Length: 487
Image 1 (spheres, rainbow, N blue to C red):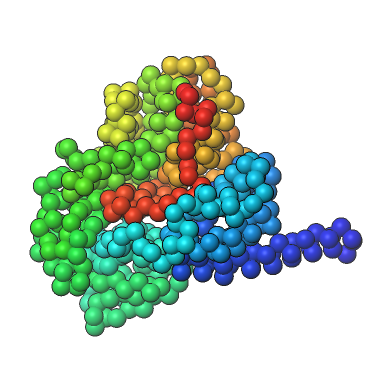
Image 2 (cartoon, rainbow, N blue to C red; image 1 turned 180 degrees about the vertical axis):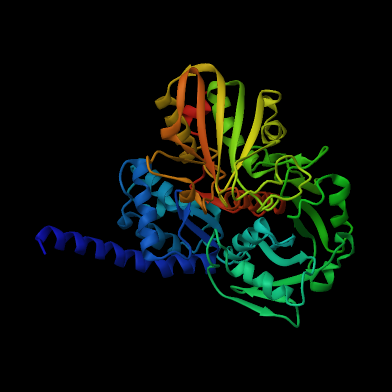
């Protein structure tokens, strides 16, 4: 080996050793202090040393250089020494803020950033809120994975409610949670107790309840009280139908994972989640497409103004379609989802106005279902009030994904090689593909990828947290950049 190759290997080994040393520290802070560590939104909990290093490397797209693990390790150690209470800490943003501050005393800097959470390890802001998943399909199982991953802090998954499909129903439900053709295997262990109808997943005990009538379930019989029921069935979408859940013992509030009808609030987290009040017993989390496009549309409307536009959604097929040609009450959806591109309707464009009233009447929309199992794309063809160019618009959306109020909703990428499968598992509502952007004066075409299953499920969990009032302190605090605030 050449001296250069030996030096490269030694340098890598040293970084890998540091990453390995971070793992128990990240885990201890999570288990003992409820501290969720991330780097620019990429979580470090339960990650391998390689994945931790990859998270550090991604920062080069943001800051122009890879984040050194020698900068983040002392931060973790200092946070651990401060014996902090529950919070979400972004080491990437925190390292940048510390460097930009010009301060030299890391402990003093962190003490000021963390505030009254210093020395509060073990203290709880509130008791965890019980969560019930009514329905256990694609979204229900992903919600379960996310809630189990969080270990019960703030939100505690207590039960799932389904209609019994067979004598070995619970075994099949657990198997579907354990294995997923799109999202891969469950990260952990699952044990089934058929006698007591429970699933134990990474220490989370989930009661499986069989019922055909949401109003007759007695959740209190299982020790479940003041629960938020998340209806994943889509069977009821209006207030009257969803109110059946409120008639059940132990239920306090209901969240629908679909667009609601009537006067129900359609919530897109990051846009109008502040509209949720204690008096709202039923709210909806809108659709995956509405969640993907509304944050990007808000950012563009705030900066450039949207006169009108058309949203074309290229959407993966769903369970609602037929695998092979057969009768379907919907137009065209009876034709084989696996063999065809299928034009169908979407209410996502109109639904944007329910979360973002300033775009009322300004958008049209359509959808094309395509033979892929997950990850979709929305093409926003917009006429703007103010002219711009591709670089300026892309830089603005990139900045919005990094440091503004929509950083949990918008991601940005400019790789020339990415395809849809690269976005499976994305936790953002939508990812702007910067290289595909087209701008001619006041006309802009923006392409937005989105994991219509997992990314949407992350948005749903954020809405549940808002309903429960369990959003943890974010460090560093995320404000709107001065250039965005001045627009």
